[in-house]
Length: 406
Image 1 (cartoon, rainbow, N blue to C red):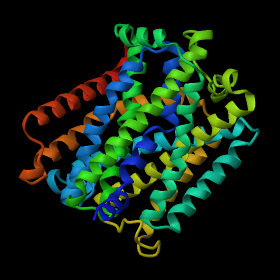
Image 2 (spheres, one colour):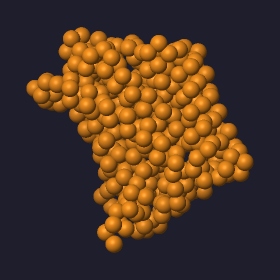
Image 3 (tube, rainbow, N blue to C red):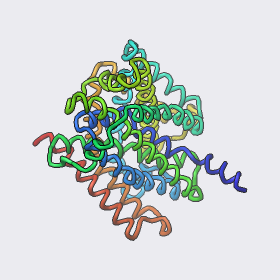
Image 4 (tube, rainbow, N blue to C red):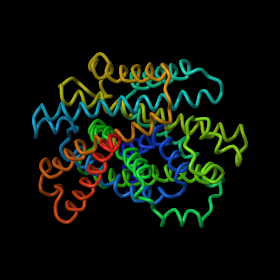
């Protein structure tokens, strides 16, 4: 019986891990690196605090999906009408297009470290990810995504080898320059790098597409909790690595290229090893996020417009689902090949994600209060805690939207 329970657990394990690997995407890697370079360890406490917050948000998405058997866009349409559903999906598409540009920019930046031109590295990535979806099932796509995402774990090894100063880390945890606008801008960017609109859409649709039900809720919560810890450990590892290198030798210096971040690793690992490990982590982060972001868009649009949407359907039975998925990849790839500044764009995209949080988290919170039956509904003291988190994140998101004008 125990063996059967273990097998059942691992059979349902995966959506949370995939979405959390995708959470530490290329833009998040860049944002964490920029944080370590400019502010040392002063944004480390925020990364720790974000562990329960990202779990809280994603657990609501999981609960809504498992209990209702419906995706996020579909629930918004049912409970608030088509207009609000289209508004929500529109914010999703904006966030996804921005994210995809950063993912492929990450692939291009990693390729340039080895002299591979962007058109070739990005083109190969688009082709690979298209084949993964068009020829597989949900389970095969999930397994491939976990395999690709696991390359991000190299950042944990790199952080250990960077030998950060415990005293400097402790000082960074306790001395927070929250009154400085530059600090707050990067703080909000880090929030936007961890809580993203497409994560909610993907996670809720993924548990539905996988066929999970309320009996899998405990497993899904564990899956999500483990993923939340892993994604933030990776963010912390990147911040610590750069703070212990660039942050020490060139304190306060902003990053401008992917090469600068890779160079942060070479004093400890050697030129070749450091470059290879960074490239593996960056490519893994970029590709798994590109899969999740494109699927989130295809699922979200299908939930609002009504077309067939499942990885369990062959392309001829759900043509629009696969067309939207592939179109997002192609548009993101073409934009990157045209040439952009990866670091500046990545931080800006994370700030944009934060600015969109009022819409995304607002609907998520209201659905948790309205769309769930009594035993699963958000209620009591926990609903107050979640409400405070949603309100705080939304206010910071609006701050991010208006701060450039002041």
